Image 1: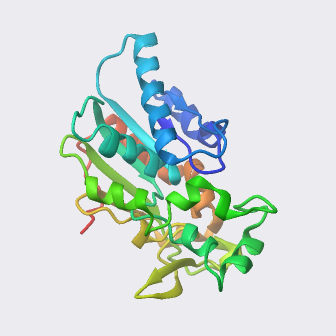
Image 2 (image 1 turned 90 degrees about the horizontal axis):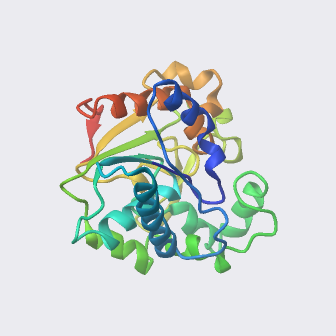
Length: 265
């Protein structure tokens, strides 16, 4: 099961879907790009319905693995932990999330920041956000703010003991500006009431945003030299098509006993 992110589409999974087909691993590709400006809870409900429909159509009743990118991870967790947290009717073996905003998104908060917001939006226009974009009207972005009621609801729900959680994040280990040029290779973070930038992130989602205690964690590239050829391959936008990330996903799908590089604290 593939779940894309904010302002994205199922096309982002083209390379992964091709690899899965080559490995004879079937997949379902959920599309919420046409739902418009709706709250993540509504998308989570649509995802739940989509899984039910795919199960009914295929006759498959066994556990599924869910792979998400970015905001897709927030949506999947809302479905699993808030909508289905008590009943646990959704049979999920593994949840593999690429660059997930598990603690809300500092970037979503930055969009709304009275000091930095306007400049950041101008910098990202046409790169990561639409031109003439107003974050105050975006229900997903407002829900992803770290202090939002939706983020608090997800935090309170906690993770499920019947699911293997795998978080895959990237960082600019070579400290190369070309990693994510809009921010000179860095990622914005909000800590102790202050904004700062760090190389420990993918340009959009910081490691602090993605942290999920108890989950398996892979920080890529495993070899810092990989950031050099080409460096932008490891930024947030390119994660679903990154060969090293795809290799890691396939390892988990073929053998769920594969050990992550480490466990989130």
